[in-house]
Image 1 (tube, one colour):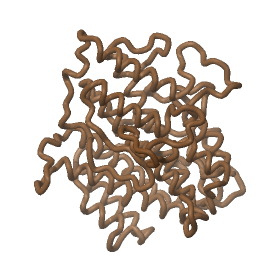
Image 2 (image 1 turned 90 degrees about the horizontal axis):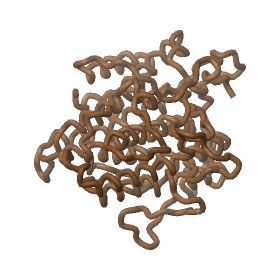
Image 3 (image 1 turned 90 degrees about the vertical axis):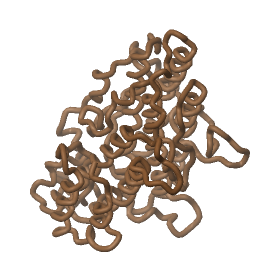
Image 4 (image 1 turned 135 degrees about the vertical axis):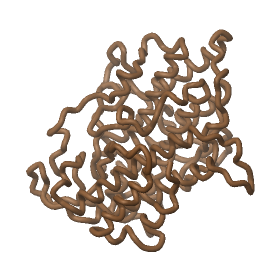
Length: 416
């Protein structure tokens, strides 16, 4: 195992803690407290996505179950990531519904996770890192992240802290209920229904769907999806409805904790993995032209995807109807295409290419891997900037070009 970059840098709590403070002891009694909790809920969901994607990209192929019955570790992780994207957008829908949708941006240096960093609202502290997929990582970090209840040996959280993400979401639910029942709060008066994300969702191996939030009943349903699929499901609940809002007997899936448990127990084999570094940082790639070019492209594409979602939440969906051209519908389809066709293809190419010796002095020969870091995109011409980076990277990695390639798909992306 390579030496982690965590030992080379200061690990701190996410910046969103200070920007949007919460007080577990006080609960949620005001709209401001609800807003702060929701922004931190979105930040929690964001923490999972690069971490799980990195582990998934590190799996060579799709695991040893690729041509045999079973999901495989790679497919399970992919299904979880897609559901985490759903949770991220459901939380943002809630922010829009209470009139605070413009008070959070996913493409924001102070919002995006910076690995290694500690998990929000977890006692004892859980260090989150970008690492290759192993049973130990899945058991010690991923299952700990998704664990519904405190472990018996962990005691009680100190004052001012939530102990698990389940406790955090239960506080959110109670806060929404309380403020919804308070006529003076008038919680839903500034709801902009037309900019909520309610369609264009696909998850072959999981469930749930985006939904319009406009009152406590619909907010409760959205939180139920988040909780039952992963964060906060009761201990011992080994299956959850594919559609938590409209459950049907026999139509079930596994919650995130149980999916990861199957990987940790070897029921869904991981298979061969690429020898990617722990917590890679961009400086590791400065002397390697290929790694430098690909890393710049990946980080720009990662930030572009987050920016696409931000723009989506600023664009009305009132014109979305069958047979009509809609800028909003285009954005919804394109951010999914960018995730699946741009980000994944760049990352899956990177991990196949050699990086060289461990820059921290280890003895292993490593592969390249994405760093998931914030980069400053130009104020205008973001898409052209991305295309220019891709054209430069093609000289080192021709696989990025050609029919149905990353370069081909970028040419079809919106310049927002």
